[in-house]
Amino acid sequence: MYQEKDIFGRSELLIGRKQMIKLSGTRVILFGVGGVGSWCAESLIRSGIGHLTMVDSDSVGVSNINRQLPATTETVGLVKVEVLQKRLLSINPHADIAAIQGVYSAETVDSFRLNDFDYIIDAIDSLQHKTHLIVTATRAKATFFSSMGAALKSDPTRIKVAAFQKVQGCPLAAALRRRLKKTAPPVKKFLCVFSDEVLPNRGAQAESSQQPEQSPDLSDSRKQIAGNGQSVWDKRKACINGTMVHITAIFGFTLAGLVIQDILKKNG
Image (tube, rainbow, N blue to C red; front, side, top):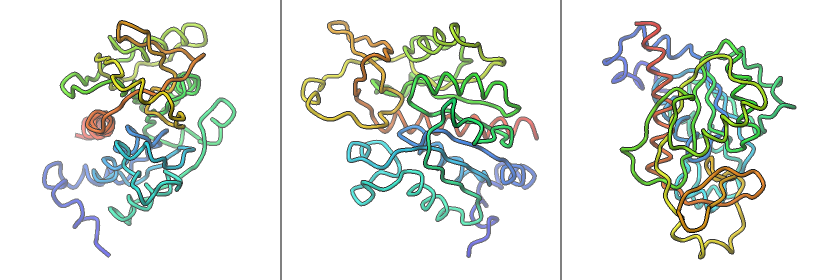
């Protein structure tokens, strides 16, 4: 079996042995391993994170293949977190990788023991569960990072990082802020990955006969507004929106990069 010093030699050359040891001891929990979360998970493990818990309830669907890391024609029907766990352990067999097929919700939150982790990453789709996670995670001792909507975008240069309250041009962020005003505000600031680009679905008419998938990359509650190409989040009507892998992957890699940068900054 390859040793960690062999696997991460190039990383250690850049950041040093002390930082690699810190990465190996860091505990991360990631909610959602779709188009954003799956690439985040791979980046974390390839960067040397030693303890990763992944939470997602879905199985691989055919429509996931265009953008989600665990999705191939050979994995359709298999549990996403289990496919991803196998892949990640083939990258670093020494890593502690837990795969939980489940849903984060107000009813299940206690089972995840969030205070056991150093970092909490949100890449989930449900507006209701996402709102609850933001409130809960910002009350935990862990550092929290969140992904905003990655659908209806194609320009990678418009992907940004900002504090949640300063995110502009993202319908999901606006909807979350409205919800949080009605429930409970986050108790501490946190960074988000987002893009202010919102494109129309040019193939919407052709796709209208397809069944909605379970995990459409942070866009399951978007409702297109006819005529202007804009979209808002509306829990009353779900709508599938177009998504490209170079966008979802950059979102995921950026989330992982925020974790790595934070670790390096704290232990520099």
